[in-house]
Structure formats: C-alpha cells, structure tokens
Image (tube, rainbow, N blue to C red):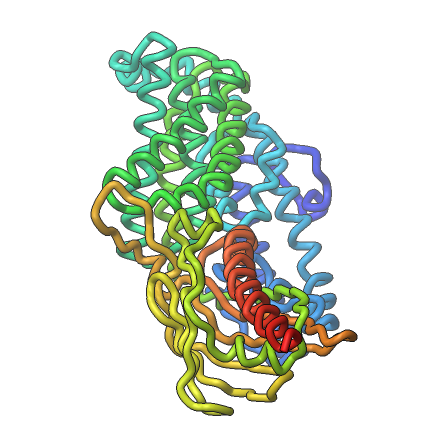
Amino acid sequence: MKMRFRDLWRWDGEISRSTYLIWAAVLFAIKYNFDRLLLRAVFHEEWSVFNYFDRATPWLSFTPRQRPAEYLVLLAAALPFLWAGIMLCLKRLRSARLPLWLAVLFVIPVLKWFLFLVLGLVPHREAAAAAKESATGPVDWLLRWYPKSAGGSAAVAVLLSALQAPIATLIGTQLLGNYGWALFVGVPFCMGFSAVLLHGARHRRTLGESLSVALLSIALAGAVLLAVAFEGLICIIMAAPLALVLAALGGLAAHAVQAAAWGVVPPRLHCIPFLALPLMLTAEHVSHEPPPLLKVTTVIEVNAPPNQVWENLVSFAELPPPTETLFKLGIAYPIHARIQGRGTGAVRHCVFSTGAFAEPIVVWDQPRLLRFSVTSNPAPMEEWTPYRHIHPRHLDGFLVSRQGQFLLTGLPNGRTRLEGTTWYHHTMWPAAYWQLWSDHIIHTIHRRVLLHVKNLSEQAQSKANSL
C-alpha cells in the first residue's frame, strides 16, 4: 500500500488512511504555494489559505467572460491537482471497499468535507474484517435496544436523522448567520446518509427501503422546523426539491456502503455525519464569498406611444388585488407607486404588501429611460406559519434589490417596447439554485407592474383616440 509520485496519475491501486492523509497534506501544501506565487507574480493578487473556503480553486474566482486569460491560466494550473486529488480518493475508496462514485464529492463544495472524513476514518477492508471478528461488546450492546422490526427500525432511523435539521439550523442561522451550502446541501445529504445506515443496522435493506427512510427524514425535518417556528411553510417548500435530491444522494451512498462486504457497518461510519456537520458549518462561516449581482429583465409591448407610457411608469394608482399564486402564498407584491419631485434626484416610492422600496432617480431621460437605485428594501415575503408571526433571519438582508430601470423604445404605429430590469443579490447558497426561485419571483413582480402600466396606457390612449 506504499505509494510513489507516479502513482498519483493512475486510478488503480489502494492506499491506507495514513498514506492518504500524508499525500493529501503534501499536495495541499504544494498547491497552496503554487497558487499563491502564481497569483502574485502573474496577476498581482494575494491568496491566502482561507480563500479555499470561498472557492475550491483560484480559477473559480474569475469567470470566462470577466477575465478569460486569467481564467484559462488558472484552470490549466489547477487541473493536475484536481486529477491527483481524485486519484487519491479512488485509491482510498477502493481500499475501504466503498463505492468509487463517491469520488464525485471531491469537487462539490461542502460535501468534500464529508468525503475527507470518510476517507480519513474508515479503515482498510482487511482491518475492518479483523475488527469485526475481534469485536465484542460495543456493537452488540448498541443493537440490543434497536428495534428488530422493519417498521420500528425505519421509525428510529427517520427520527434520529431528522433531528440533525433543527440542530444544524439553530447553529447555522441563529449563531453563525449562514444560509448556505452547509445548511441546504450538507445537512440533507448527511440526513439521508444517517437514515439509511441506521435503518440497515440489523439487516440489509432494499434500495426502495433505503430511499424511503432518506426522504421521510426530510419530510419530518420540514414539519419539525415549521412546528418549532424556525421557518415558514413557503421557505420549506422552496428548499424541498434540493433537499430531497441531496437526501436521496446521501441515501444512495449509504446504501452502497451497506451493500459492501463488511457485514455490520462500522460504528465510526455512523459518527461521520455528526462530525461532518460542524466542520461544514464552520468552514462556511469563515468564508467571505461575495454574493453575485444578478439581473432580471422582463419585456412587454404596449399599444400606446412612449410619452403616454412614461407617465404611468413614474407613478401609478393602486393595482387590483393579485391573482398570481405566488402572491397569494405570501410573496410580497406591488400595490402602488408615487414620486416626490421630478427629474434626477427625485425619489420614487414603490409600495409593496410588506412595505415600501425607496428608489432615488439616477437617470431621468424622458420618455426613454428611468433608472433608479434602491436604498430601502421591505421584507420579501410574509411566511405561512401556524403561529401569529415569525421572522426568520433570511427575511432581513438575504434578498436585496440594488438598482432598477424602465427602458422605453418606440415602435411603428405608435407602440412601445417596455422593458423592466432589476439588479439584485442574495446571500443564500447554492446561488444557482436559489436564483431559479428569486428570478421567477422578480419576473412575476415585473409582469404585475408592467401589465398594469400597459392597461393604464392603452386605456388613456384609447380615450385620446376617441376624442
């Protein structure tokens, strides 16, 4: 199980825990110093070890569109280390007789910490077999109280796994202020993993049984979070698709472990989710990844000239009650708009169901462009809850509008192309997943306003034409 440098480029072979940890430390030290020197010498930027908590590799600090040359150079420099890391993981997984596809976790933020714990704690297959033969009291003692029936085993597995969610939510959101990868990716994965291992403590389970307890643990966790007033129903529904997928992935990993030729799963594997969660939450807390600035644009056409449309954009009377499902569920929706002053420097107030946006005008190009900054944001929603009122921390500053504009383009036959744009950011991760929800919400808000302006403008134009 000794390893030479050239073995880093081969996927076959096995290595022990100590060999894995030594080589991982050596590669990390080489990579850190290489990244630090490269960024300082070529791009005149500083890089510290804490930046690895923000991004898996330095090349992720740039995007191809922003800085293509830097991106390609840093990507090329990172690829050898990425390959070597995956090869190390494959050798260690093979040694522990764990499914090789778990090496995919090496490139997934937060879940990589789970993988490192597994590879550092699980023994070589022969050592595990010897420990099983020589083991006496602890495992047997723990199994005495564990239910023998499939139903009882499933109930205990789901209950114990679901408890991870409120504990991690309390620590992550209330103490650390995190709504990120650890909470929305790490916790569901660990819950699915724990539920399946616990359910298989006495007997091998089918894939269907394993996935059932993994998914039921997420359902119970959602109910607990709602019952103890940690979260409202809307946010739980939004997080559910991601949580269910990750719990299923964790359950699949545990099911594959359970199917390995070990007999009873080593007790230390049951401990890994409980060790991984604090590591994930802490690693995310020390990171300083800036939230991305996102953009949503909605376009409609109005049967009225730009001058007519402009007047209804600057301020408008109260909108009719909402018919959109999102708004009926509690998402904040626009009610009316008013403006103080005219021209650049005027302040527009767009009143929503939860409060008012303060929007100082920065560009007044009548009747073509109205651009404004946003200095005050109301809460993005009113949570559905069995209690009179709850106010989760994510309602304050986790979805913030920064700037908006209306662009009017004259079309033939006295028509107008009306385009509404919002620039915003949120600090909930993974950003790409939550952007699916936030983009849809903002697009729906845009359409409510733009269609109202369209109706007002077309009605006014119709009256003008009839005179």
